Amino acid sequence: MRNFPLFIARRIYGSHDGKQKASRPAINIATAGVAIGLAVMIISVAIVLGFKHTIQRKVIGFGGQIEVADFMTLQSSDQYPVVMNDSMLTVLRRIPNVAHVQRYVLKEGILKTDSDFLGVAFKGVGPEWDSTFIHQNMVAGSIPRFSDSASHNRIVISQAQADKLHLHAGDRIFAYFIDHNGVRTRRFTIAGIYQTNLKKFDESIVFTDLYTARKLNGWYDDQASGAEVMLHDFSRLDETEQYFVTLVNRTVDHYGETYASATIRDLYPQIFQWLDLMNLNVWVILGLMIAVAGVTMISGLLIIILERTTMIGILKALGARNKTIRHTFLWFAAFILLKGLVIGNAIALGLLALQRYTGFVHLDARTYYVSTVPVEFAWPYFVAINIVTILLCLLILVGPSFLISHIHPSKSMRYE
Image (cartoon, rainbow, N blue to C red; front, side, top):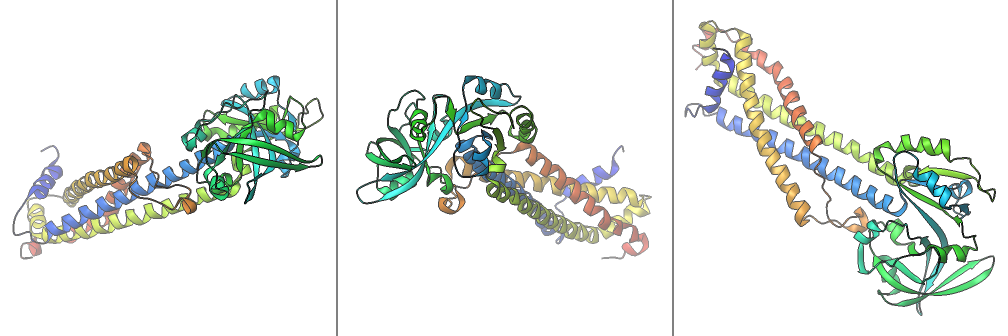
């Protein structure tokens, strides 16, 4: 027979001999251990990746992946203007991996109602502004078409700001701007309200016309606080940054201001360091779950070997080598593993699909920045987890399988 160990393993695995009272529960426990361990690993990876990428997309939605601004702006909290005209935007758009470039102007101000006031940062954006992210997080009203050539006195505020000032879409509110020119007042109409649950941004950012913010700063028509750059491939962030360092950094505009660039990781290091720490949690979970699956498999295999001692003795008496018998029980273990993997994948993918489409597990958005547990179907990771689980568990079982070499035919015949 071409594969004798596989043939015997199939017969043993498919056997429902009532005399084998211990092996069936052992098989079930080993299968459950593999299934639960695999399900936990897949769900953990899906949740961590989903959470990381969700938070990452939110942070990027407020500022792009790379920011180009005046050198002093990136080094301090003050705003210094830099030229962002058509020629400069063309230079940025031609850099490899750049997908989109948009200007912005920041101006600090105060929103005031009859009973309360709130300090915010007005972010002026122009017609090229990609509003997809904010549009996906709108809770009331709509996003107006912001202009770089006229002021429409319309703003988009956050739900956190609206709650503090008791405002609604369509309300009108006064804003005050204090600088070396004194105090200036503008009256704005609230066109829409957004909510991203990122406290750092929701409490401070108000969107308005680029023209309005520029005039409030007293800057020239070709100046801005900087430009936000979106990339085709975020994984090439460091590589793309080198192009900006070479082509943009340390160049000077016609007003004598120096350009500089910074990545989203440089601008918000605490957020990305926190997200990177999650990788350690995933590795710990993967290690623990593979250990659990391996221990249950070892226990099950040892019970099965001990229970099949007579059969092992008979096979040895008929001339079967230790290697052949070890392969038989490793094939048997592989059947248990495969069944556990099928059940584990079904459980994990079922729960992940349920969470994706129903969001039945909720979170406190004030703490976790999301209202439901985000999941991501990372198929390459899922396949890798399955393959690694099979290989490691079988490798772990090689040692216990050598117990077979210590079983002697003459003694095993009388084992029972």
